[in-house]
Image (cartoon, rainbow, N blue to C red; front, side, top):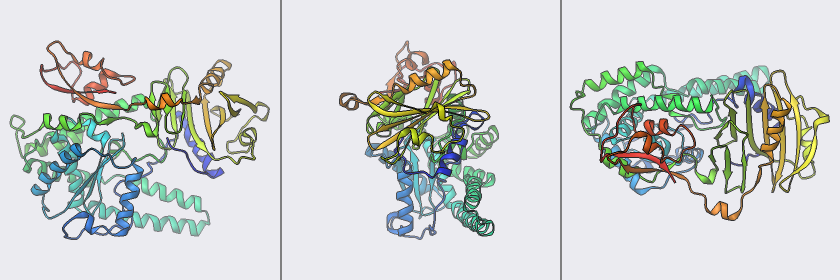
Length: 496
C-alpha cells in the first residue's frame, strides 16, 4: 500500500461502489496490461536490446518496472534466469533476436515480453516454479509471442480502441463514458486471443525441447498455477485491487484443455520416460533466500495484522477477516463474504475537519446524526455510518501526519455487535515504534533437505505463512496431497 494522491469525488464514489458490490472488494480491471506498449517500434537487428530502445520504449520500460515495485536485485538469480534465456534464444526460430530479462520485485505471478525483446518475470512467479525447465517453459512462451509478433498485433488493436473511445467522448460529450469504453476495450485486449496463446504454447514447448529442457515443464507449471489460483480464490474470495498489476493466472488460465494440448505438444519432442533436463537442484539453489510475498517497504500482512514500517503505522482487522495488500489499499473480507473492509489514504485540506470530510458527500447515505469526532491512540479522527440499499458502512477518517487514512467497514447487516467489532478494530490503528520497524523481516523462500522422518506436514509446520500451510507447501513444491518426501531431496519452505 502506498499513499494515494488526490481522487475526484466522482472517482471516489465509483471506487466505493465497486468496492462492495455483490460482496467483492473493488472489482476492476488490472492497472497494467503487460503487453501494451505505447509507441513501441518493431525490434531491429542490433547488438543489444538497450541500444535499440527508443525514448518511448525506455519510458514504457521504466513505467512498467515501477508498476511492479521496481527491479529485484539478486545477481545470482539474475544470472540463472539469463542463462536459461541464452539457451532458449539459441534454440529459437530467431536466434538473432536480442533479449534482456528484468526480474520484478512483485509477489504477483506474472511474466511478459515487449516486442523489442524485453522480458519480464516477477519474483512471485519464480517462487512458484520448481526447476529450470518450468521457468524455461514460461520464458519460451513469452519469447514465442515476440517471435510471432503477437504483441505488435495487439498494439494495433489497442490504438483502434483509443480511437473508438475518442469518438464516443466526442459524440456524447461525456469523457467518463469514453474512458469507460476504453477501459472495457483494454480489458478485452488484456489477454492474447486463445489462438495466439495456443500458438505461443506450441512454439514455446518446441524452443524448450530443442534447448535441452524437459518440455513437460509447461504442463507441470500450468498445473501448479491452477492450484495456486484455486488457493488464492479461496483465500481472498474474489478480492481484486483496482490498479494492481495484471496477473499471469488471469491471462494464462490453466484449463484442463490447455494442459492436455501442452502435453500433446511435449510428446512430439520427448517421451515422459526421457523428458530432458530439469536442473531442479541448480534452480532451487538460485532461489534460496528469494523474498516471498509482500515487501516490507510496501507494508505486509501477518494474520489479521497489517504492518507498514515505512509509513509508520499498523492496525488489526476484526476476528475472522482475511487481508490482502495492494498498491492502492489494504482489502479484507470475512469468511462469509458478508463483511468487508478497505484501508486507503487520501489528502484532506488542513482547514477541513475530519467530521466535515465524512459529511462532504464522497459517499452517499451518510447519517449526519452519526458523525462523531474522536481521538484514536492520540490521532485526530472521526467516524460515521452510511447506509445503502444492500450494504451499510462504518467509516473512520484518521489524520496521521500529513495524510488522512480512511478505514471503511462494510456489512450486509450492521448489527450493534458487528459495529462494536469495527470500532475495536479501528482502535488498533497506532504508530509503529522505531524498534518494531527495525526488526521487520520479509518472508523468504528457504531451501531445506528432507530428513528420513520428514513428511509434508512436518515441513509445512516450519512455514511462517499465516494459513493453509500444508496447501502452500504442496503447491510450492509441485506435490499432490498424500505425496511422500524423498530422503535427502531439497524442498521449498517459507520462513523469515
